[in-house]
Amino acid sequence: MATQFKRILCPFDFSDAAVNAATYAAHLAKDTDRELLLMYIHQEVLWQGIAPMDGGVFAYQNELAPEMPERMDVYVQSIRQSYGIRCGYVAKRHVEHLAVALSEEIEAGNPDLVVMGTGGATYGSLFSTNTYQVIRKTSRPLLMIPKELTFRPLRNIIYATDYCPNDFSHIKGLLKWTEPYSPRLTILHISKNDSRLSDELFSCFQDVLEDEFASRHTIRYKRVIGNDVPGLLHEAMEGSDLLVLLAKQYSFFEKLFHRSTIRKLSFIAGYPILIYPDKA
Picture (cartoon, rainbow, N blue to C red):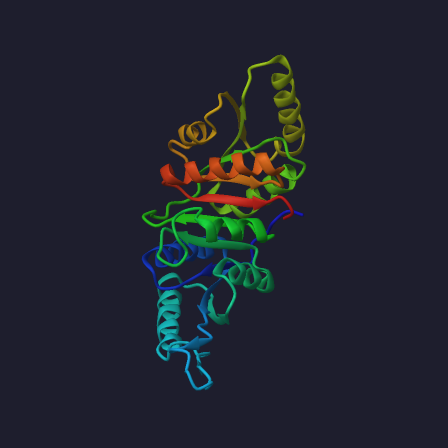
């Protein structure tokens, strides 16, 4: 099913990375007429203090910091005033690992897009363990925003493909929600070998997409040859505003390679990366 964004959800913890992601998400919400929902997760410390020797009990800690609701109210109001958008927040308490808590709340909130800041103290560096686990567990598209990234309209988009069955619906949804930017879309495939078969596969894939989209959209197609997937993706992103990847279901060895590819790319990426889950 094609994705049409109605609500953007942004995990938030007042870190620099989270504030930057919320700012980016606010721009998107304004440009695409969407609601922005900030989500604060408090990881509960169930017991605090030292275990009593006489068999007594620990003090139970289950409250958000007293100042948190007021801080969130003030910040949300500033977003509303600055961008003229619908904006709210939810605050949740969890005892689970942060990645599990994030995934559960994302699924429960049913957003069309999750915008997640990276490089902050809580959520970790881009594609850290928390972020990668959220990618694996959620069925929602995730837009990863590097800590130092400044928003700019999504006018040039690279969609990297391995000829997946869901490419068609993802591309259709992508063109729909980025329509306000009139983007120039490039479909990119990286082949390890330059063979006749790989040429034919790419041509067939291009023909299928052209039949559907050529009358309404101008799409460029590009195939590059090489083994350094992160490096080739990074080179292709020069002058572009968004990289789109698909988080496929991989075998054990393919998972290791794919995770390594994403991790390497994250260290050099200075642009947003939109990840569609294979089951979205």
